[in-house]
Image 1 (tube, one colour):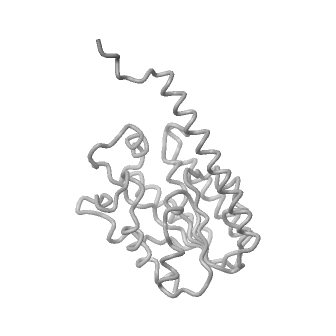
Image 2: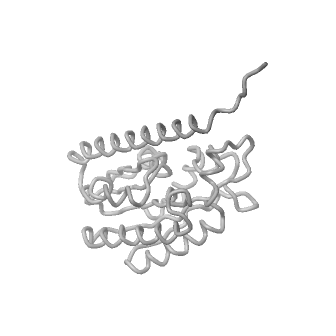
Image 3: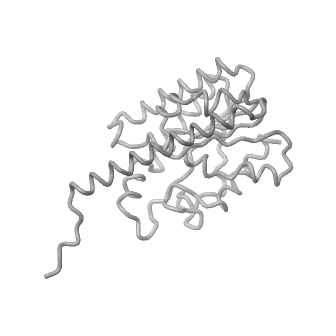
Length: 234
């Protein structure tokens, strides 16, 4: 008789806890590395910061190819929530004293598993705190609040982890969050920018050829994002 192929629930919980612990360790290591790099970074450059959607943006290479002469830094960290960002805001934002900041943070807050039904309010409260601190500490910096990217809910062979990640990241929720971020940007003298043109299919979802898992994107998508960003960089 064949054994039951299902993994026991207790083991699944243990695996999940182990993965979370490893992810937190990786985040802590990246923060430490960024602190080291910040010590020799040039002030007044261009900073891209946020979570994995920023970390995976090859903006430094694309900026170099485009002939941008100002130093460009990427301080994105995968798995970062707005809570994490606020805790490490010196390292991932303030210490670089950038002249321009491009911010994409909050997608990891889009889950009822952590924050329950109030996740959107939590995200927006923390986003406002980030902008308030940035404005106080970096009064002369141009701050660009980037619209959240579209997602794709219809990829084949979607696993349980991807489904959970996408559950609250619907087009409606993303649009609602973008509207709130736009309002916060205006409140704090920042600029809201939507650089998503060319990323969506006819149904408004992230194009399948750009999609890694329904949330994260291949470099081909980021090339489009970069082209849309050029007016704010040059």
